[in-house]
Length: 260
Image 1 (tube, helix red, strand yellow):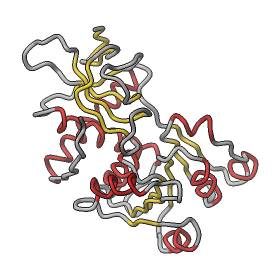
Image 2 (cartoon, one colour):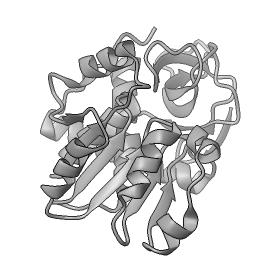
Image 3 (cartoon, helix red, strand yellow):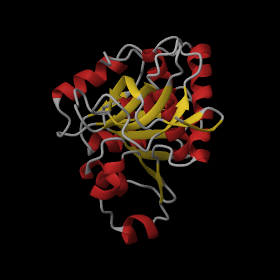
């Protein structure tokens, strides 16, 4: 274990004790992870990592932030997921009265919507035919009881109606990692609009017409990813402290599915 600063560690080889894949029932792919060193010491510290969910150990490199004072791994997982979502929200630049459209009915997208809702932002969750019934069922279990969000089934009239009812600016975020919703969101970007890529796979799988979408509209693209540097990890650690306070003060309750 290499301690870098302020409790940030390189979690390569650490034991995964809780995980929340971004796709329902996924045996591989990316997700939120909670891990510990596996030293056997009493009250081992827990760390949050974004990375591949397969296997029983963290496959490096993977900077982990300390999940302090979490009563158990599942609670730590909830707090870490919300912290990541708060960092996504800040990437969009939205404010009170604005709107956020997230593509992807999965834990990454839905926790981002929950974080936005807590900040007075109007939200819509975009799903496509590529979303399986099982994926949506698992996502709805996570969201139905506690997250108020609009479920938009198509990218045409319903999304345009939603946008027409928004008073502030609209930001878009891709949590699906597939080209179709990105193309549709990019086509609806307003001048100086923002599109945030939240999936590492979307960066290599989606090609946009930069002249039409970026240059002529002065659109801004932002990329959210797991921490790669100490500075990024420390920033995410601060979001974690904010998430813990939000859960305590607002009593936000996001029931997570079984993580083992």
